[in-house]
Image (cartoon, rainbow, N blue to C red; front, top):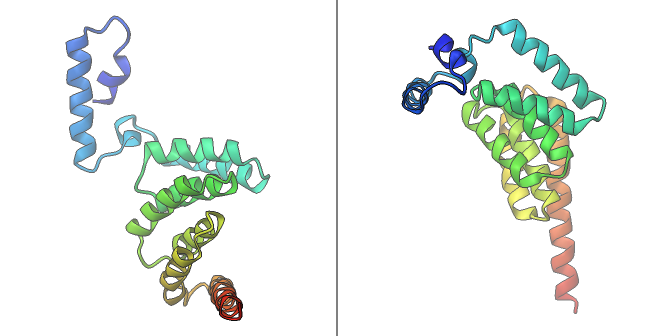
Length: 174
């Protein structure tokens, strides 16, 4: 299939392109990825992941988002690609988009507390403390193997709860 898809060019009749798109769609509906259809090798994924990660670490978040986004389009079942993409989007202030990709990562690995924690951060960025608190309540019980994240999540939860209590007390005093 890969050879057929890659060999298609502007001279390819539209009916052939339609048939190839249909076959690619069927392949992906059966759990195949675009990367598999294109015969992308694991070392190629790793090379692009290294570029994406280095861009993120260097605070070049748009470059990181572009590279992680490419990885996600090639293999949307890799949670590290999804989390990398979502993290870059979060750093760009694109919280709604980041929440979508963190949510996908949490669906693929529901025991990983990191997506829930980052969803909470994004919810706070959107000024939605109640939803942030819900995400933290998902993160904390899953963070036994992530003590630093557990501490941060608990501290964030305590701040949200404390802020809400102070706000309610202030309103009651008026």
